[in-house]
Amino acid sequence: MLRQMEGSQAVAETVALCRPEVICAYPISPQTHIVEALSRITRAGRLGTCEYVNVESEFAALSACVGASAAGARTYTATASQGLLYMAEALYNASGLGLPIVMTVANRAIGAPINIWNDHSDSMSQRDSGWIQLYAETNQEAVDLHVQAYALAEELSLPVMVCMDGFVLTHAFERVDLPAQEQVDAFLPAYEPRQVLDPDDPVSIGAMVGPEAFTEVRYLAHARHLEALERIPAVAASFEAAFGRRSGGLVRGYRTEDADTVVLALGSVLGTIKDVIDELRESGEPVGAATLTTFRPFPFEALRALLGGKRHVVVVERAFSTGVGGIVSADVRAALPDAEVRTVVAGLGGRPVTRAALRGLLTAGEPEPLTFLDLDRDLVARELARVRARRRSGPSAENMLRDLAGGG
Image (cartoon, rainbow, N blue to C red):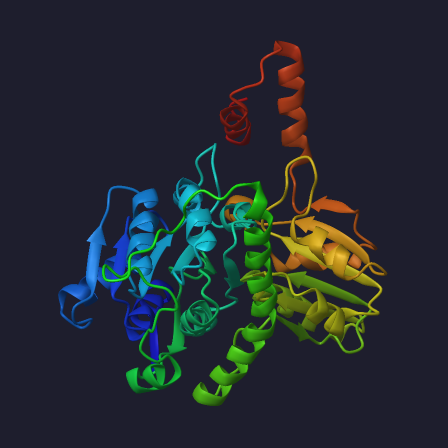
């Protein structure tokens, strides 16, 4: 059914179609509209006996999901930014126990300083927590990925994050094709847990494991992620057959066949990148784009199959590793050792990534190995000079805001 609606509302409606049995919620911008909508849906009785649990923190939200999932319930939660960091201990517990929890991450910057706008700092910080990470380019893909996420999680017995850009997608009104309940039921059968706590057959989970077996336990988690590399495209193909549209998968190309330079990114920034690619193609520039939908596990072979032999790859990243540079770029370099891989850090804290800036970057010759797009170097230089003169390291953010306001 085609509807014009906010991304958060579309995700909430889709999660409801997946028939969760326990929803644990603690609000944090920009995911609040998702859990508010699910609260209304649950209160209206549309989810039958589903338990909607209001908790006191994000840590409690995921901890309650861990307990509910271990008891055999299909579970859901959502978070963002500092909320995801607050969950960190429970994130590792959920994946280590092999619990098929689905969580929406409405991507948002991490403080300090406080910033509520979009980048990928939050989910990137938890890339090694053992969760599958899927990134939506559009609100339609966010809808589709949640249905696929439950199928993947329950087949692999692994938790899945569906990452969608905060505000850019969560608060954007777009036309989306919401599936019918009958379609989702046919694609996603009633949940049959692969492991469940049963009072009649008691077991311990998450107990102490010493050096004699811990490596093997961690290897099994790695092996499940390797299995996911096969199952993710298979689930995406089944979804296309059932719903009539392509969505999800590992990695997708856009005008890459004859491209010398390919711009690779995750999330909604691909829309702007594709517009720039189209403009440059009209000028005869051999450029293309690639969308990395699955970041964890990283699709090395799929990326090689798509971009092997390309001379230049520019990775546009909405987060970076302080003191190192690109996060996604490191994996891309490992996958494409013969390509010149350049990192462009862009859009931190919600700064717009404009067509003009990208076009200028791609037409100015080969980028530096690490570029910060639209960086105000004069503003940085003024603060560094102030630090040297005063021998005081802060408050830098507040100082620079005064400079921008003309009150330096």
